Image 1 (cartoon, rainbow, N blue to C red):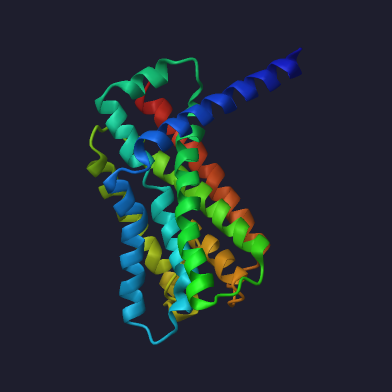
Image 2: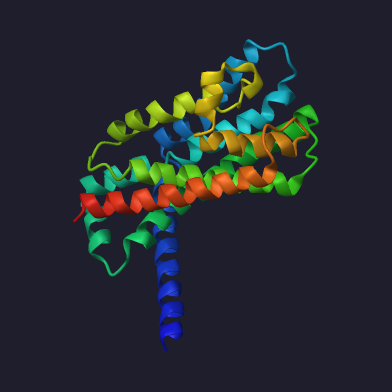
Length: 252
């Protein structure tokens, strides 16, 4: 009976998480500020780096995929949750018979799915326009999926801050996202950075996600792929735990 209850409870939580994610998908995916933050900003960042580098554009596609996942996956929740606080729908969600775990997972799932869809654009462009070859499709899949999970949960974590203004959360989030681009080997290889930068890179989930994606394209990897996977899973679990505690603290 206990095992049956656990399975039923888990199924109910999964249904609730999917309902929350589907709600965000319908309402927020086409909002202009999310499109700008999730698609246009990484594109302009890519063009800025490409203009200053004497390398083929196709060689920068793996870095563009990494940055696109970083921004797109963490852009849904910082917009949706403050807006729902303003309209008082988030309070109704908290009072529903749904656990905080399901809420955190559901909100993160919407960013995860959004980022995977957006990241397919540079992936396809790289193959068609630049003739990029993916030597390890499974490694690429692991890098994209685990990175999206990490950063969507990071967006949910920052959205726990009790404000009704998306701009407040985006400002705090960009204080983290922008430095990650420069210390994680996306456009500047780790072996070209000073020792301090390399030391900081070890604490960035983007370092390991980008390393997997670069490896999938046949580029030199900084770490063993297994280590990259383990680190991304660890970051995901840590972000989920902190997000749950923050929502519990700010909504007790």
